[in-house]
Amino acid sequence: MTSDRLDLWSSLLIRLTRASPRWAVSGNVEEGLAGEGDIDLVAPPADWMELEGEFRRWATESGFDPIISCPHRPGVLVLVAMGDPGAPLYKLEVLGYRHFRGARIYAADDLVPAMEMDPRGWRRLRPGAAALIKLVPNGITWSGGLKWTGPKAARVLDLLRQDPEGVHLASKAFPSRGSLVERAAGAAAAGRWPRARMVALAGWALTRGLLKPLEALARLRYRISPAARCQLLAALKGGRLVMRDGAQFRMLAESHEDGWGSNP
Image (cartoon, rainbow, N blue to C red):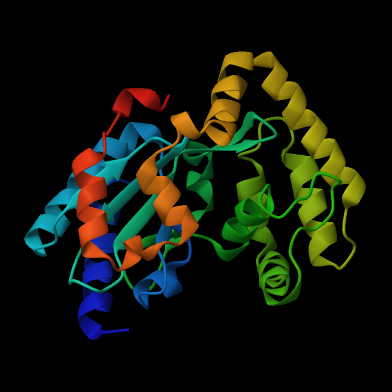
């Protein structure tokens, strides 16, 4: 980590906090500040253009080029800027709503009550809330088990245990299933993995998906069709040298289409 990178990231997060009252850091902030990854945010899609504008102004003032805005993944806005050659990219991943088994299960707007101020000057989700939306659905297998083991599982479960109020506030973002989610998280934090409740949650999500088939099909198409995928997202997800290869990143920037109309 360099002090310059830390100061730059911190100034951006503070600027975003001033730009919109409905966004928050949701994860990976320490890794991002250290130059070891991106920073995850939650923000309603209605605020994305404002956040993108602030990101672009910050990047331009910092001398970063090129800058890419990518809304091709349903429910997510990715903002990327290249700083010094050979250094990691500056990358924000902004979640507007989350899918599980083909259905939207919560939206960023509904997480506002679970937000608080970080002592360093930016807005964040409470620890229990951040752990809950990381666990559900990322940490659940198709059979209702816990997908993670080792330190990652321990870290998430510890945060659920340490901040039950954050879990409670975030569980209200799940329409009609907040109580189920909160009870499941409480059991997991207590060391009793709630497989039956996780299966019930998955069943509820599948039913919601059937009620909105066009949305579910669009999500499925993105996941299984190479033609529907974005080269930038594929490169970032694949861990290729795009993180440090300036020439490759510039080529992606030249061919990339912002495609705001593609993300409902």
